[in-house]
Image 1 (spheres, one colour):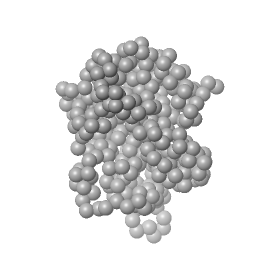
Image 2 (cartoon, rainbow, N blue to C red):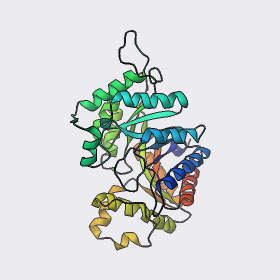
Image 3 (cartoon, one colour):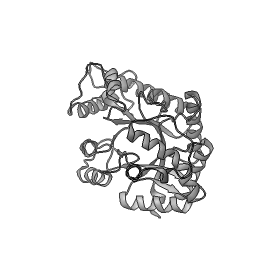
Image 4 (cartoon, one colour):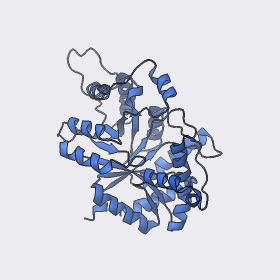
Length: 332
């Protein structure tokens, strides 16, 4: 079998608010995109927790998971991820336990340990709590207990939640979560869609140290892939300028709504800015159907990923769907 045919496709959505659109528009686009991904046979559709960011409407992640799950039928829906330090494990267990009861067998719980926001907002979310390195592993273990079968005499029970055994994924862009996922025998998703620097090192560590568990008998890896596909390389580069603008805004602290594409945008940047954008998007696949196929093949060979989690920030929602069509065909 061709190696690409073994790889599942999924989509991560930050629910981008497009200029000059509204949050309501962004939410409707998200649902239509999830429905289209389902028709293409995508395995899962994840939503990322972010706060206080202009142009990103995915802060109430569990609410959005329910919204997308209600509007689809088969595709798995989940968080990519819930930033666990912002929440008490019991609250997360109850929210995702409720979702699992509403949509059995379709809910994923991806967990991250970054704040997903700026320091001021982080303090507003966490109040007086100071995060320590040992807190995240402890909270992950507590979530596993709360979502597992209730034990006799267990005093703290997530209701709903207990017994739902919602699959837990660890997300990360460094070696910390790779090692923890390996130790706990959990599936692992690397955030190479925005921080590809340690991709290969983290995957090697995860696979080397993986310990089989009741959840998983062998390592399972998702790799984040920025994707912009179009009939020609030239059009794909033009459409990708919306992503380039977004990335430069992240790097310079000037985030805003997703902007329409600009011809020759990269060429207008200072060489250092251009290099920074390229570093951010080192795992990106941008181009025509053949370029996408080649990009996927190279990434599959270098990472041995089980699944690609695409991130596709195309300004025109219809052309975003077309981009997903091209990606799906590339794996056939």
